[in-house]
Image (cartoon, rainbow, N blue to C red; front, side, top):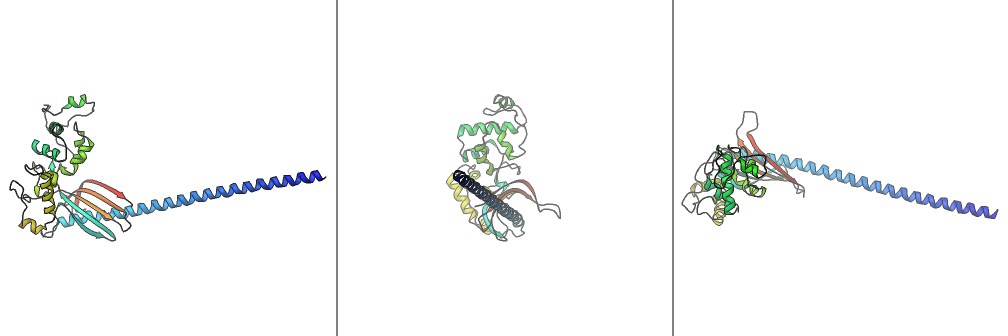
Length: 307
């Protein structure tokens, strides 16, 4: 009888131990589930906040684009914004705007620029002479209508020999991005060239009054140091000062000579008070049908960040 009682005590103790383990496991499981729920809720909250901030910043950046077009169309030339890359600041609701405009006329048009201009621009962005000459000839072979190969150029058989499924278009570039298909062109080189080239002007020579430093270096005698100094001096001058005191190139040519074009690249960055920002770069042509957008969009890219 006494043995049987002891057995029951041991059985009861074991059962309580198992129950305690089960309870502990349930508590741990609930803790894990609760932690996962908290993490999921926090992640969703952060994602929602990011999307909300990104959307607010994006619309503010678009407002900056519309403001830039408005300022470019002012009747008073002294109040009109200058499209030479200088930065203008403004606000849209609680967002800080930083806006710069580049007149496409100040860039090198890769469809009509001559050999010397293309070569000088490639060297200005840091491409060594032999490679620059090969690229210039390949660019000219791409856009000319014949199948004759320039000394350092490339026609269809050269593309085939390189294992490429395409060849030169034998016509003008349809986009600046198409330049990446030219034999010998790399993404790194294209990335250096992209801010300084266009397809929208039809001008053999850029309008230097709106040109940035690498484009200014296509002018004989303009060194990188001189180009940087001229750009800084030009951007420090108000429109009235630009007209009254034109800067001079080493060859005596006024830096502000020549008019602007009809197409502009606008960079608009909007920053919210919490540090979230969106920037967009749009190539636009002012003017449009009544009741519609006041400009046509020819190119568009954007970026977003949440700091």
